[in-house]
Image (tube, rainbow over all chains, first blue to last red; front, side, top):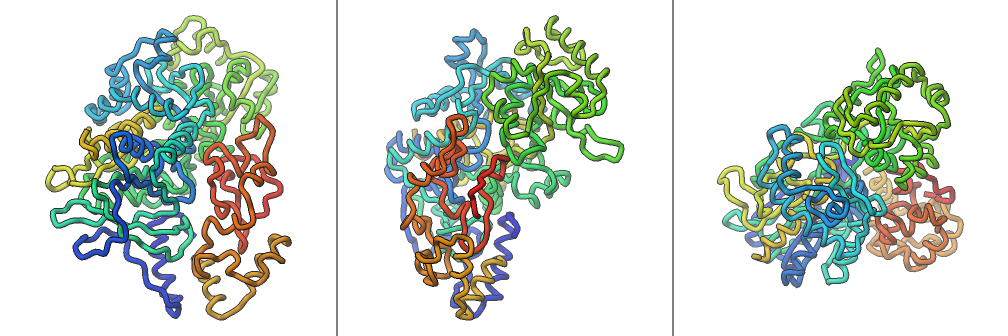
Length: 506
Length: 117
């Protein structure tokens, strides 16, 4: 059974043909249709599709501004989407922790870092809008009960340390409190509810949605489709499409089913494609980002990703065949992923590089004991032991570590120009912790075009589609070629809040 | 799809072997479920059971206690986990007609030795 839903739906219909004897009505095709003459099963104030950061933030913000009847619909059986299974890393400029640590930062500085990684095609207006409101979004998570590690991290491509991380090192440290807050303030939540298309008024405005009930992801069965009228509007917070192999390969043929993916299984993109069908402008769909901190030794995001993100600033990544470094360990994600993918044997088979850290520095992150315990990372007492285990040339590795430790002392990386601020006083020395690195599909920079009011722009008129708003990964073009780490959560939350404010006219 | 067709086919032919199959996975369901499909299929035979169906007999708080892990691994408790708390519907990891992998195994290598599918 394919997990790709667009295909699944076709098979579903074919399957019904086989079972024609059963008294069953074929489900409505998953396309938008005119609302004229439709029988409404339900009328609500605000419809939100998707229950990740963007959807949850939108629901809370709308309620705060007076909405009384907000409904979140989630396709999967559990709430949180891909937001519940990522690193929980939140970048914001001018935060209380930056003041405490004496880090000088500003909206301009954060936007400039992102523009560099965006390689000329990022949307400066949207980046500035998100960075300007990121502290408000962070505050929403704190108000809901999110807790963060008591230190900042400096992620790849960021010129200063500006990243908070939840104390559980996971996005669930935000989605769980936000979800509970939604319940507390009376937001209605519906799981197993599958978006099946928009219902469109005479002027092309979105007036409602078709939602399939009792939906079981990856299985085919005929849940009833309800026509739901949204009095104020519909917010699409349906995320990316990294798990839809056919659609991601249509954009980038190298992203085959063999390439790992950090995303939740539901990240299949039907909401986004339905908006395209309605007229939304597709932006940057081929820019699909792989996370360079992922491990080939576990599935998805796992334990290693966060371990690596924390350790990369004060660790070295080396080729297994030479023992030599091959990249700036905190360059932006695309630079690093491309560099890692070049680690291959003469036949072209992957030889995942090694991330080597001093155990004494790595253990400051709680995931270190997990990666060792669950055999997705290893501890070595000596360099000889490490080199033997992985078959790395000892002499080359020894020379590389001595050279790098010189850079730790001088504060200047003459090999790859790495920012050595967070590596200060952190020599690479025994005992060592090691994980293997191999990129996994992580984030879709592409999606529908939105403006700073979270309105979705129509391809033909250039105007906003009335009644339709979008927030989070389903939107495209904000980050350009490569999104910086920890910039998605602020984007999702700020744009979710923005959509709610637009709907509530505040 | 395949599974659905098989189930549908069996239902159409009026066979009752399904409940026998379910009891093969869990002996202790033999007596309580028996051959009465409706014990679980509260949405009609053609639909999956509702997510409340298992809760007729099972209590998530009790289950969370039974599957609790040590303090350092407390968030690996499938019935009260880091990502979704106590809210993952039973059917996400459990089935009566086929074996399923735990949801956690999508990303993690830790094991649930007593998980029967």
